[in-house]
Structure formats: structure tokens, C-alpha cells
Length: 155
Image 1 (cartoon, rainbow, N blue to C red):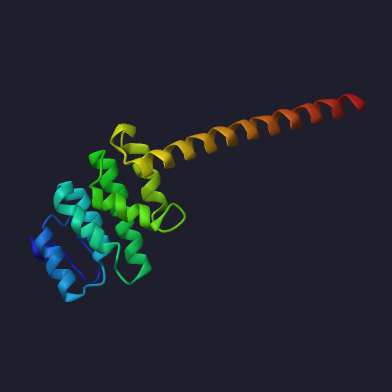
Image 2: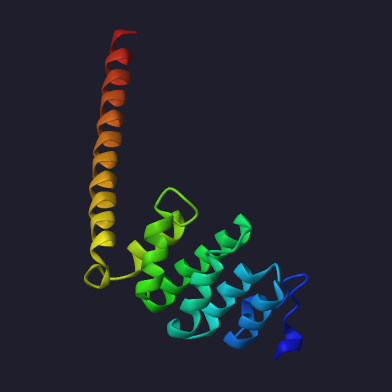
């Protein structure tokens, strides 16, 4: 119901379940389209929400684009897959930009077999990096403990 959505304050936009209302708000140039894209990800099918999320990632204001990428991550969490268009938007933005959390959500919630090749390489990269960092930290902790133990004996 349109009366539940306050485009000025953003109240109720996380509950938006009408893609046509989002489209109309986009045509009017409303400022909280990224927030509403999260609502579409929560309330609508992936097929309905995806084109609007993609469009929201192209909004001029960075904070609204950030919300759009949050919507992409939300879609990955809820659907355990994304559309080819959403994968493409995430790839273009890259892991160091606004899409970092959405990419991490995708890697966490979408099964490996459903990922496109680029995301499979990101998954391998992240897994190897995390494993190496874990080994490095455990090694550093072991060296520090040994140093403290050796230092304690000399005192």
C-alpha cells in the first residue's frame, strides 16, 4: 500500500513490495531509492528486484549506491543466487569499492557451483588469503608465547 511508504523520511521503505512503485519513484527522482531497493530485495522475487537493484547501483549519490549494494548482498543471502546482471554490477564495482560487503555476502551465501567464473576466482583468492593470514597469526602468537616463556625463565 503506497500510503505506508514515506519517500521523504524513508519510513516504511524496507517493506516496499511493489516494483512499479519503485519505478514510479525513480521517475520522480526520489532520494531514497537505495533504501527502497533493500525493501524490494526483502519483499519481492529476485527476478522482480534485480533490475531495480542494478538501476539503484547507478544512482548519483554514493550513500544511495551503498544501499543498493546492500540490497544486492541481501538478495544473495535470501535467494542463495543472483542474476547475471547483479553479478556483472558487483564485478564492475569490485571488491575494494562500495560492493565489498555485497561481494562477501555473495561468496558466503551463494553455493560455489552457482558462482560465475570471476566469483569462483574471488572465492579461491579469499579462501587462500584467509588461510594464510590465519597461519601467520597463529605463528606470530606461538613466537610471542615462546618469547614470553623464555623471558620469564631468565628473570
